[in-house]
Length: 511
Image (cartoon, rainbow, N blue to C red; front, side):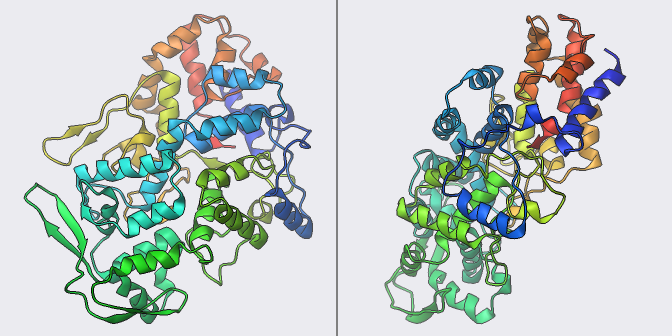
């Protein structure tokens, strides 16, 4: 196959992705009548008010890839794609969503997102140390796997005491740039309230910081172990002020963190539920109902207040069951819309008229390339001495420690986990990223040495298998014509076509 022909594959797919020449059969489906739930009512009402037509529901091929990537951070296998596309049941999307929410990769990928927010890393400027990182990550992942009620998850973190190795949630109080009460209060507000205290008055921050004034730290005889505790004997009587302005008289001998946790996890609290449902919406849909998703304040109103209030009520009514919110969003027509917009008006994305295009996370992207080629990455931690080598079968979304070095992950925007801000992850494309995927020895070696691609070249229909493996769909008629010169069993051509498809926007983006 000529390079010019392969460039045609890239061009055809990229044009379809950008909407310039949309391939409707591949990316959209006309019948959206069977997809709808209560989430869609406030969204459609807002779109009608602004005179914006919603995009059609996406095709089954687009949906199966989208939901695997958004829920698991993992591409579906060709067998999983084929099974879903051949299923004629009207409720197959709902059933697939239920299945994915029970898979181990769901907890793996959610833990990755939470460890970004919780600043889980071994050293500089966060100094948790590897043993504590592993314990903290495992606790977060296990909590998500068991679908621990969110209010309990938060309470366990805010009231934790004990060893950083044996009581993992105490690492929240260690994963800050310093241990001043005001710094801890800032981390609590950002992580669990979606509030940036830089906009608060000094008096308001000091009032909240009073709840964390008695937290102390001490070393043990075990290397790098640290005990986090509350000094109940040395504490003083003082006033603290909740973020809603209510004053609380704190008495000596009281763990003030429990008082704050009681307030934060009350069903009528204005912060807790709103923050987490907005984050989940952002993780799945790509744009927060309040945007930025960790900047909740009166002068940054939600794009759809009724939608945000609905999700808040649903979370509280279902006892802080996070998977219930995932199901609501994933089963909605809003989530399942095509990524091809019906209008050029920029506000269409803000009001959720279509699914927004966005690049795969760095960890998801390299895991997908490894899955396609049957290869692995070598991850090495320089902390502690001697160096720690991560098992080769470990996927990138399973990495616990942001201190683990990786030139690929750093190039493609993995967050340093210094701030806990969602915006610390940078998924914007760059020329260096494009050159790496097009021409680096790292990617070319994976393609050239791939036993998986060599086996695929010997299959009965290697072109179909390549498309199912890389793009999670069958090729269109036009694409079949482009690759009509392909000869089964030619390993070089298989690798070359795989290279072309990996370099399409369709592969590199959520769509």
